[in-house]
Image (cartoon, rainbow, N blue to C red; front, side):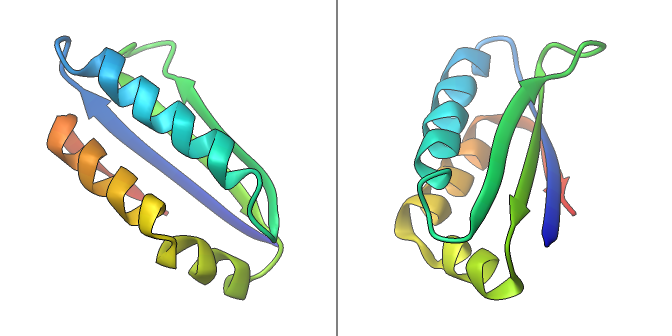
Length: 89
């Protein structure tokens, strides 16, 4: 199993759109082959920060996920909305 975590911080005026885009991405990703779980949550200490937690069956499944055009488009859009770009681990 592969675990991916990430965070990204919005500004007050971009948060609603960032959450919408992120939630849409999570729901789509859950249907992909090899996805065990995929979640986004709001940070309790900083409500403008989103946390992502993903579990994938294999490196191959994760690589396939990253090649999906909608996944790349989502990350690009989130970066456009971000006050701080965040990171994935």
